[in-house]
Image: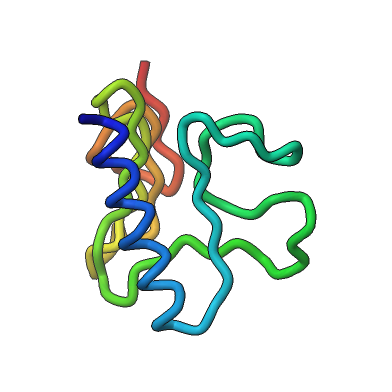
Length: 99
């Protein structure tokens, strides 16, 4: 089931990338490429363009591992926009470390 979800997610990302006419790379479980042995979203060693992770509106960006939110970048407009929280989903300073 996880592999099907990852495959579907990969297809969605590929379609979005094609629509935006940009480069994109997503690896999946069992990837046999010599330059990308592990799962990741990003560039391989051959890409020369910068990697951009973005939202086009004022939305937060969340990073998770093991279904737990680990890091947050606040995108909501206001005094806290751009604050980064590691170990908290509500950073109160430009870099808020918790735990």
